Image (cartoon, rainbow, N blue to C red; front, top):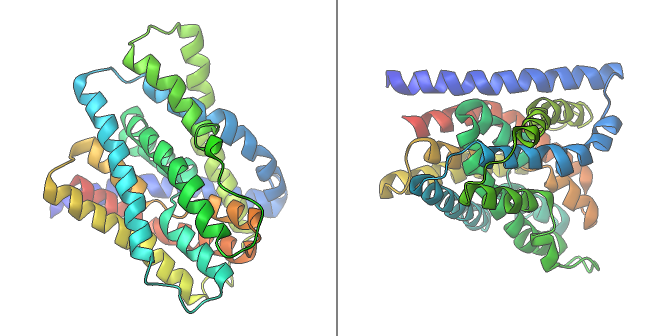
Length: 314
């Protein structure tokens, strides 16, 4: 039990560090130093350049062995199971809300914040090894998001937007994996002149992502985000039920252990993705409900993520 609390405190420390940066972003927005408008303008920089560099750097700094290659494949399988668990667990709920909010809450139960929370926290807790395993989760996230996610958000909406197969590959996360994976598998010796810029750019991921999240929270209407009971239910599914189901499944079967298990649980316990808001806007759902849901679950994850990580490491 003492080991559990030690692990819990270590994970909590990392989460608190990240949320201190979030708080700085919140203050910056309120004072006009770095506003939500600026953060949204910076989103493409994070999405198209910085996060891919984090993923590529993880491949460049991980030694190829049979064990690491097997771990990467297992991490992908674990991420797929995590999404399936979220889909299954959300099925019985939110039937008494309107179709628009139903889609938002179901989406929020399944899709975790890979770029803004899972990757930075994996980097903080596990280092590049954690990012390496989480990169497999990025692929699974995109596969599910642009298939099941599109279906959920567009279902019964009469919208024109449809699933496009090219979105499974033509997105920054998967492209970064397609660049980094051959370098990892072929053990190519990449010149330091290329490695260093990739590492430097990738190092901006955590602080910028957390600052941006702070500006979003600043504009989410904090006084009202705690009033919707369905948000509590969505939070219970996303950041409690899903990681506990995955933890029980993986520990009981003995499929994973060590850094691989912890990385998988970090992904499973991550709060709802900002894609919840972006997809709501794209498919004509209520972006106000989506923003408050993401903000609420992100706040709640401050308490739950350290516990889940500690359980994975216990």
